[in-house]
Image (tube, rainbow, N blue to C red):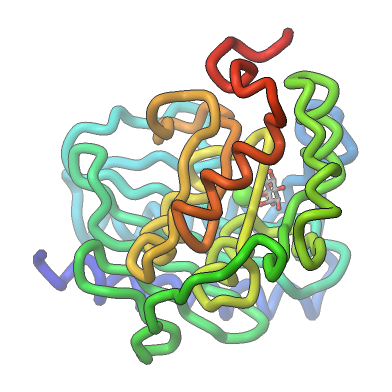
Length: 273
Ligand code: IPD
Ligand code: CA
Ligand code: CA
């Protein structure tokens, strides 16, 4: 792989992070998307997206983009950057920590590399397809075997409710099989924490490409597994998908068994509308 885009991406992601740290010293303007008080968009989601895209466009004019705040995303042919300018906007606004900038480069829908920058921790996660994953330049170890009873699961209350109301899946029943539950509020960071061995399962009823495109590469490089639960493969254009990431494919399969109970058929049939 040509290392130029990766070096450039690392530089602009760190610069964008310092813009966000400065922003937290000021009052940040925030809107609701489609009038939903749970779906925030700040002036900085737009500023950071614009900062990343305009810089990449200057350097690599032929490259394309799929990015959260864009009206019209490009198709997936060729070199495509998949961007979440702020993942965890609620945390950015309410906690001023636990949010990331997520940037990945794909070629013809195949991953090349992904960067997840935990802005307030100043932690930069990197995954290079086929070449390993790194945290601040230090190679991450491959994940060891974990039993379900040792696992910590991350899911939002919103997702747990959608799983039950829309798909008739009782994610909350996993409480008896696992060690515990946490909700960090930023999908990309939750998936990176699986890569570190701090979490083991991340489940979401509604995840989009920019939430997992970079972190998924990092997880894959340490032997973790992620996929869409109902669809054959993950959508990279930004359509919502029912998603699960785990520290291994064995845990993924065990969770599917556990939440579907005796009725495995519910995973083969379309979700209840
Ligand atoms: C959200 C966060 C959140 C997840 C949502 C995402 P955003 O991204 O990753 O943890 O539960 O599904 O949409 O809106 O902060 O970029
Ligand atoms: Ca996101
Ligand atoms: Ca976002």
